[in-house]
Length: 253
Image 1 (tube, rainbow, N blue to C red):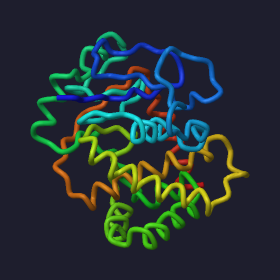
Image 2: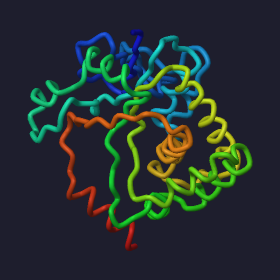
Image 3: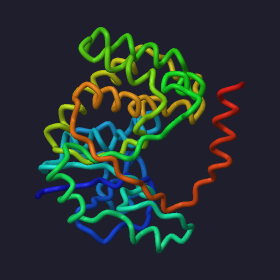
C-alpha cells in the first residue's frame, strides 16, 4: 500500500523513524534549506505560506506528489493509537501511529481524521466570527453558493454545529485528496481576490489556513465518507488555561 504522510514543518525538528512520514518544509521559498523537501519546487504556492499556512504543502502534494494514499500531520502533532496524559516527550513518541496502523485503518475507512473539537458554548460559525473576521466567512459562503451550490446545505449544517475537525490533519486516497484540493483552492483563490487583508495582523493574515479547517468539514459533510476519528498527540506542552482564557476573551469582548 503506497501511503505517504507529509509532516509539515518550518524548522528542523525530530521526525518519526518510519518511511511513511515525509517531512516537508512549508513556506520554503526564500528560506534557508532545512534538508527536507521544500514546497517551492514544481507547481507551487510556497510564497503564500504566511496566509495559507500548511496549505502550501497540501497544494504542492496535490500538484506534484504521486501515491495511492496521502496524509498530513504536523511536526509537533501526530495521529496516535491512544490518548496519553504526560509531558514526557519520549513517552508521547511511543503512541504515534506507524505504517501498519495506517494500513489496517485504510482497509476499513475512507478517511482518517482527528477527533472533533467541541466548542460547547459556541457554534462553528460564532466561534469563527469571534476569533477571526466575520466578513471573510460570509464571503466564503457566497462563493460556495456561486461556484458549488450543491455544498450550500452542508455549509449551513457545519456552521450550526458545535463540533469541528480542526488542525488540517487527515489520511485518505490520493484521488479523493485531489478532488478535495481542486474544490478547496478554487474557493480560496476566489476568496483571496475578494477580501483585503492588508490591515490584518500576522495572526489574522493566516485567514486561508483558518478558513480551510471549516471548509474541509463542509466538503466531508457533502461527501458522506466512512470516517475513523483518531486521537492526536502533541509533542509540545499545551497551555490549556491560556487557550481557554483566549477563547472566552474573544467570545465576550
